[in-house]
Image 1 (spheres, rainbow, N blue to C red):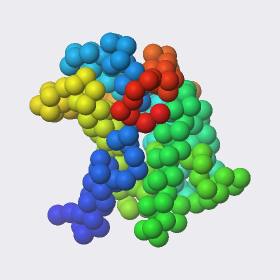
Image 2: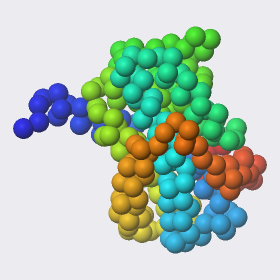
Image 3: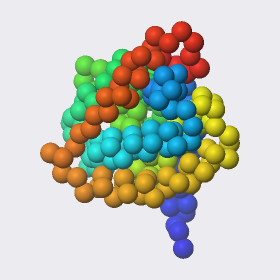
Length: 229
């Protein structure tokens, strides 16, 4: 039978990964809005290719394995290592918009942690957390609440996908059922991404999706936008 601590950590994980967590994830489309405007993404099939491609070729090789290393650093109370991987993750944000998203979401989660009396370490030279990446703060909270690394990463990945599918439902637009079907279809891919990320060596990390980076940059100058830039 699960212990009381395990039961509590599951509820904390659901809270941490919830779309209603007030960190502003819903406000960003990560380039999808421009991709729809440019007709790169225009139906279920092209949306699947866009989102699954990001997961397969970017998240599995970058965000997830780096997030796993950040979790391990917090687990070992190794702030210098957490800071090192955070800097690398930040360097991989290829547009001003992606950096702004990281900064805003991280600061929002930091404010929540402060209200919950969770003592997030301060970074030397950056006391207000301007350059924390969201996943760095997320992994700290997950570790603090006793959530295991696998579950924390799975929930983070699902939260990313759910937010992106919700954006697609609004932008393309897709029906709610089509959106749910995409989520269901993605489950094997998410499992594959998790398994791959756990096997990568440090020298195998890295990803670049030029079209996504360009879409994020071009989104900043769209005349009319639903999502934040």
